[in-house]
Image 1 (cartoon, rainbow, N blue to C red):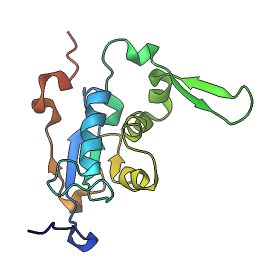
Image 2 (tube, rainbow, N blue to C red; image 1 turned 180 degrees about the vertical axis):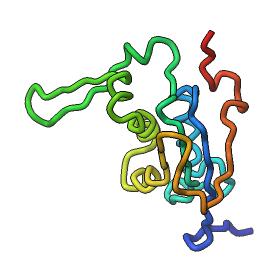
Image 3 (cartoon, one colour; image 1 turned 90 degrees about the vertical axis):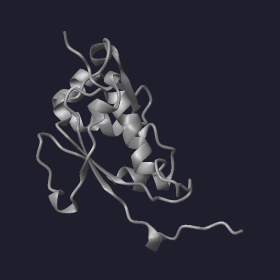
Length: 154
């Protein structure tokens, strides 16, 4: 018996479409990181990039559970002494709503050059239109996978 090794020419990535309206950021980011790493495939290899492309639409309607939208803080450092900066999801939603999901997914991937290639497979758009119609993406109804995936506003 011999082990089959996957070659780059044998990799055929799929395209998936997810509508992010009323979805919770962390649950969606976890699912997307699984898809773009290729961990949902039987041919998963940690040192190769054979994940799928993911298109996320309606990113401006994404939600946080609990009080995280106002209370959660993201920190970054400018590199200068005393240069720590903080922002909240509410501020980021006003300026760049697509960065919220990209940051969450990026922090779920391992560091290094491979994760940069994998992050390029995530396409995030405002509104319900996207320029990838010719790839015939398969629609993933993330709301039906688990009832906790959506934020129920009563």
